[in-house]
Amino acid sequence: MDHDISAIFKGLINSNPYPVVVCNLEFRIIYMNDCAAERYRKHGGRELVGKLLTSFFNPEAISKADMVVEWFKESKDNNRVFCYHNDEFNTDNYLVAIRDENGELMAFTGIHESRTPDTETPYKMD
Image 1 (cartoon, rainbow, N blue to C red):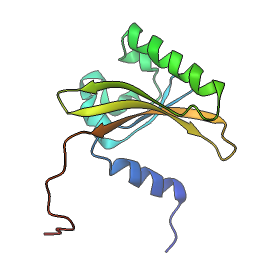
Image 2 (cartoon, helix red, strand yellow):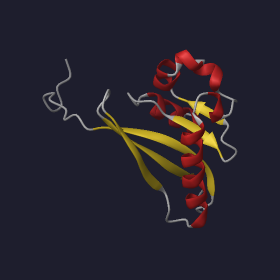
Image 3 (cartoon, helix red, strand yellow):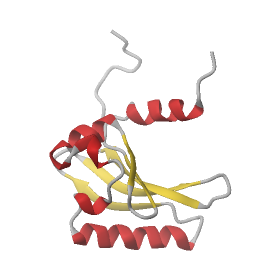
Image 4 (tube, rainbow, N blue to C red):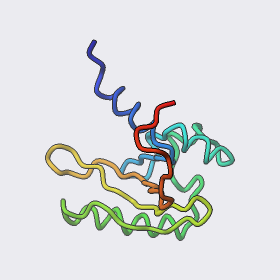
């Protein structure tokens, strides 16, 4: 059975245990995974889709994001910027360019990467 590629990618993004928020180049939120909807519930959760990042980002954060997006536009090689470490969740947070098949900037996203080593037994499935 074939699946629509967009459904596959949405499933992949929703499997991420950390927030993923995708914005267009006008800073409008176009997608958020389930974790992001829950994490940002106090700001409106899934209701933020379609709204500008200014709905819940402070002016300093918007200014920094704007500088990063401008840097993404300067070169197809400019694709990832470390933003900050979140002590509460022990994650490093990045802004990442989303480019089309020609390398043109289409959107951007925030990525959270855990810095806590996984202590599970490899391939344990019970």
